[in-house]
Amino acid sequence: MKHSVTIEETRELLSEYKGQTVGLVPTMGALHEGHGTLIQVAKEACDIVVVSIFLNPLQFGPDEDFESYPKDLKGDLALCENYGVDLVFAPSEKVMYPREMEFNIGIKSMANILDGVKRPGHFEGVVTVVSKLFNIIQPDMAFFGEKDRQQLMIIKRYVQDFNVPVKIQDVPTKREESGLARSSRNVNLTESEYQEASNIYQALKMASQKIKDGETNVNKIQSLIKIHIEQYTSGSIDDLAIYTANDLGEIDEIDSDVIIFIAVQFSKARLIDNLYVSI
Ligand code: AMP
Image (cartoon, rainbow, N blue to C red; front, side):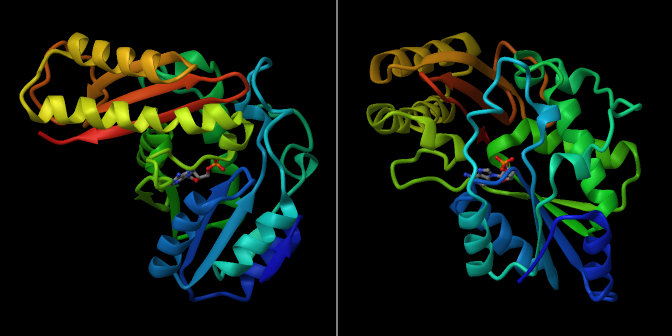
C-alpha cells in the first residue's frame, strides 16, 4: 500500500495507474468497519482504491468537536492495508488549504434543513473539500455512506449541477450488532451512553414499522420516536424530521417513500442516523 501526503507525490503515484479505474473513499480518519464497507464496495467496482484521510476544519463550526474528534493515523493505515487499499492520501491542513480560500461554494435549499441548519457552513465545507479531492485524485467513482444521507444527496446534486465526471456510489450504513450505526464519534460516548445509543436505531425501526403498518401522520410518528429516545437514553434529540425520499420535501401525511432523520446529543458526542422507509 502506498501512502502520500503531498499533492505532487499523489499525482505522480496515480500516474502509474493509467488506464485503470480509480475509486475514491473520502474520510476524516479514525476509521472503522463502516469505512471498511466503503472500501470493499470500492474494490469491487474499481481497479484501484484510494482512501483520503483528512480532518477538514472547514466543515466544523466554532463550537463543534474539531479538537476532540478522534485521530489515529497509525490504526487507519493498518485498517486500509488490511482492506487492500492501494493508496492512502493523508494531507496536512497546509497542503489542502495553503491560504484562505478566495472562492466559496454556496448551497441553496438542500442545506436549509437538518445539519445544514444545525451546523451552518458544514455542507459548504464538505463540498469544498470533496471538490478539491476530486481535482487532486481525479477518480472515476467516489463512495459515500448512507449514514450521512444529506451529505450523500448534496454531493450527488453537486456532481450533477457542475457536470463533475465522477460517479457517486452510495453504500448502506454498517451497524453494530445492536443496531448502532458505526461512527468515529462513538468513541466519545461514555460506556452507558454507548449501550443506550442502540435505541436510536430501535426508534427508527419502530417508526418504520408503524409507517408500514399504515400510520401516515408525521407528527404522530415523530412523537413516538421522541418518547422512545427520552425513555431509553440519556441523550436529547437535537433534530428529528421525516422528509420525502426523492427530494427531501416537507410533509404532514406520508404517501410516498420517506427518510426519517435523527440527531441525538450525548454528553460529548452528537450522533446522527437515518432510515429510508419504502411504502
Ligand atoms: P467520515 O470519516 O465520518 O467523514 O466518513 C467518511 C465516509 O464514510 C462518509 O461517506 C460516511 O458516510 C461513511 N460512513 C461513516 N460511517 C459509516 C457507516 N457506519 N456505514 C457506512 N458508511 C459510513
